[in-house]
Length: 310
Image: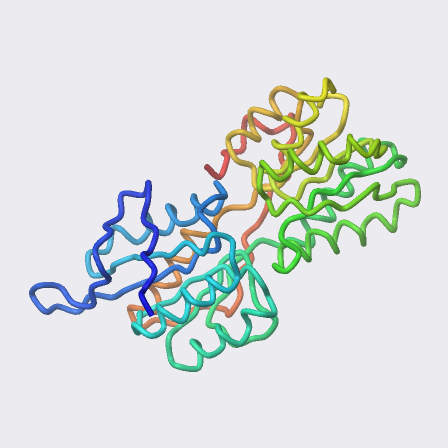
């Protein structure tokens, strides 16, 4: 079967084949990242952050693949990297259950596996780095409950529901809403953290005459898409509380403009992933199997003091 070309666009990375040794026959470590999709700005930034963090190490080569948002292709990319016996495999699994066994096989083969932002249903991996998605979702629900004075209907724009962040960002929000009986979910519309899909889903909700008083978007990309759709429909987003998640630069601008009510920092974990990979390559041991990175709630009160993740 012909090997699919790995996508190495807009990152200043070489498109040459993976090399396992330098011309001087010195050992060259290969760290491979099987990315879900490069069509999402957060995921593209995740790849860039990893590349930048590893680029200071001349004995480490970083390569990555783009599955184009397709679970089967991401599994194939993982298997291709494993067949080439890369030294470290990093991935962010699109499907927590379907990718459990393929990732476990790589782990059992002796290749360390680092999971970033998303984990699998199981424990057969080396290290997992993320933020507390359930806690962030609870904070988003608490924020909207306060803004809405405990009454109203919320439109939820959902991240990929087969991924652990998509699951936890939904479960945590719904759990917290149980404490606020005056709040209801108007609808849950899947938009996969894609801006274009979020525009489509909000337009769909408006066409259905769906009544909603606020929007809980499980990523800033979806929140920004929702803002665009509302404006296109002649509605003022400043009058509809909207929360996002990630805190990218565009979210900061939207908070400054009063169009986005709040966001929650969710770094790409590229630095932490590179740090873990280098520790393992140097023969060190990781302090823990899982690492949780703190998140900050960002509103107009502190938007000038918190730096966007990119």
